[in-house]
Amino acid sequence: MQQMQHQMMGYDRAITMFSPDGRLLQVEYAKKTVKQGSTAMGIVCKDGVVLVADKRIVDPLVIPESVEKIFQVDDHIGATASGIMSDARVLIERAQIKAQQHQVTFDTPVDVDEIVKDVCNLNQMCTQSGGLRPFGVALLITGVDQQGPKLFETDPVGIFFQYRAAVIGEAETEVEEILKKEYKESITVDDAIKLGVRALIKALDGEFGPERLDIAYIRISDKKFRRMEKKEIEGIFNAMKKK
Image: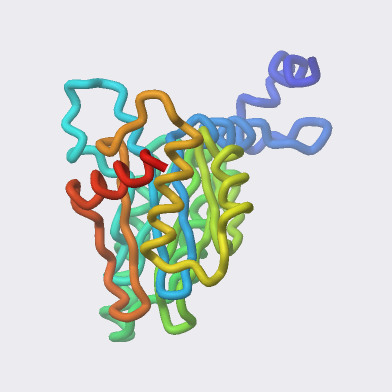
């Protein structure tokens, strides 16, 4: 009822307008968009980091390999998103440019934290400037830098938090429960991939298949982003489906 009153009074029409109870309704709508997006998760392991995402392909005529849900930001940094993927692409491209600029300027790989802060600065700016709208997407940015493996979650407001394991998107509640029960700090990259796939199978069920999976990881040993091939994903999916 209160939400309807706010809409009728126009508090949701401008990003710069606070409602009487101190809310920015456009930002709240952006967060709802994130929750409607396809599921993605990140897991920090003792030997690296893992990203597992659902491509959510709804049209059988779409070529699954053409759908990208996980992105390489730099050799040692990857990211995935949930929400409006065109918004995600803009933020990812900004992060890629930031990483390259840092490499050229300082001749060293950029820290994961610096990429996250730069993305969140743009997110925050879009919550207080007239004529703009918030980015309708949340990102999981992960990588391995001098401090070790890291995972951050950003949201449309420009807030970010560091996690051991995090999930965003439509099945956030279900997958988060599984991660809370089964995640351990001693988990390896290989086991984390299996955990991520198993969690998506349990949470989404139905017609969920290996063609919808996008998986990438970065190991501490070489700090290199690697996306899993189709055959590798199918093997893990089939093994987890039997359990």
